[in-house]
Length: 542
Ligand SMILES: Cc1cc2nc3c(=O)[nH]c(=O)nc-3n(C[C@H](O)[C@H](O)[C@H](O)COP(=O)(O)OP(=O)(O)OC[C@H]3O[C@@H](n4cnc5c(N)ncnc54)[C@H](O)[C@@H]3O)c2cc1C
Image (cartoon, rainbow, N blue to C red; front, side, top):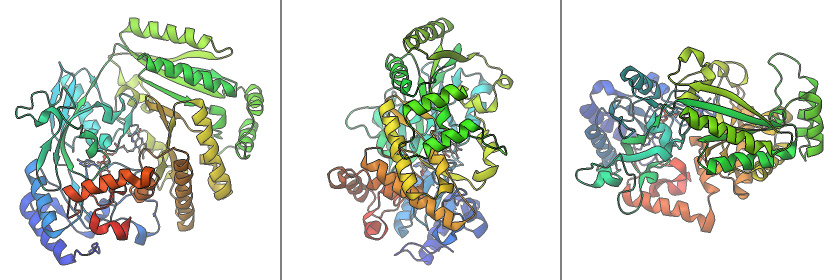
């Protein structure tokens, strides 16, 4: 048995498990060592340090809202901490592992019904256990004209992904498409948000706000409730979906390139955009020596100033590798897409030397075999392609992400990369530096901000993992000081990420803690999630 956080005894846990069994059935409470192991994070940053891992004491899998309510009431009786997930695929951010060892995991996989697909109004209502792959099948088998807003690996669930502010290449910010929620509160009571609070709830999925404070967001990245239903706006399959890119061999061109693509976003012409610097992302083909330009790029990136624009321009000219690139994504009726591409071409022609290219034009209905697996998520087709490459090399033990947000401007992108470089040069061993010095794609799935997710590979060596964790902390602090917070974090670091959000003596966290104490006096739901600890654990854990 796992040692429970005080004051809970193992006999309290045993009594609670018996009561859980009476509610959900003996087969749906899991407490053997073998079963518990399945709920631990396979991508843990403490891979070879088992004593530091967050482990679960048991799992319970309710099949209905009523069963979730009863599980919560029993947990209150024995003060057993619960940790909920929908499909538990949040790898890189904690998987199905809790923020506190000893939690009983509430596994919602049995609540897996697609409750409604409204073709006229373009919305979807699901239970938490519905995953993206099943949803795709559901749409395709019934001929619904909608795309699935899946993340890059097409696993996971609409509800779990949206609740952690997940992103897709179909909708961008997946939480932004959320309409109504049904939530079991820490008391066991059921709440419906927005128009769902009217007795008929007729417009629950049509209008997100209802009347009074908008509370949907309070249940995302929070420990204020267990979400049992959620509705989403859907993206209709367009006639055409196209992607263009604009590249330049000049470093300073990133400023007008980003400004132009963002202006098109503001005009509502593009649904996604991104920025990258391929030459500053030096990668040698696997197993081969790095070409000369890659070695030169690495040398510039390893310098404290990161290389001057002039040096980068020269390297780009010499190597023929683009230095500044933006991409834009457009979809809709073919006449609109063609006109938008033409307009984009005209806008970018104002930047001397920038090369505009249409990279892909796909006409629906798609033939899935024509779409390479790594591009399928862009068309709402779930694919597990990232795991083919993850099974190899440095990341075979998995990874976790450093995921800061900066403004969608070249100034901010250069500035955050410089801060990251300085932290890494000052505090990381040489062998650890490459992934942070190189540039990674900056996605504007959020209209005004870039998010980047730096993968940190987990090693077989405990001291390397420890050094990476220390580096992670330094990066979070250095970025936090300059206003670049994390948009999402592995469960192991959520308190330190929240520490950065400290305006006015941590007014935000104090507000959230006051709410936590008021609605969850026994502190049973996901203690420590997003750094929000209940009163009884605040002193010892935060
Ligand atoms: C290589 C790689 C690439 C990735 N790319 C992306 C990407 O492109 N976009 C992206 O968004 N993510 C990405 N991820 C992260 C992750 O795989 C997905 O976000 C995935 O959808 C999350 O898993 P899930 O849906 O099963 O959520 P879950 O694991 O079920 O839950 C996620 C979080 O929400 C909470 N939660 C879940 N359900 C409930 C509920 N019903 N009530 C209350 N709280 C709940 C959980 O406590 C947890 O903190 C990537 C991961 C890897 C390893």
